[in-house]
Image (cartoon, rainbow, N blue to C red; front, side, top):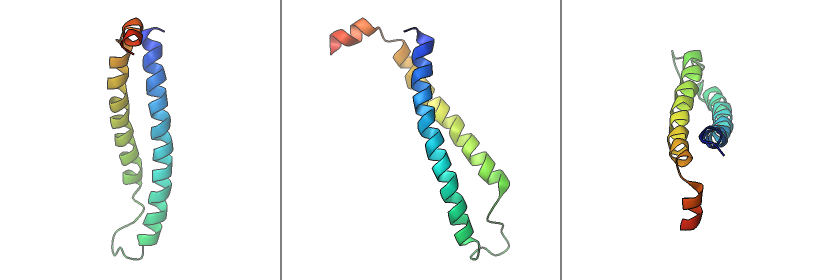
Length: 85
């Protein structure tokens, strides 16, 4: 496999985990925000900017965190890796 396909494979599998975790996290955040709404006085529990900005920032960090090891893995010679095993 060429370097690009290795990076795409590893980055894609990492992003699937991020997408599932992000969806579950957003769902849980909505439930918790609704349950805490009665405790918040003068503050809106459903801040749209927060619910948009946090997943975007965390998704960007996750892309970087998955890309760095994927790029490193793409530079490994498969024959050398198999001989080391």
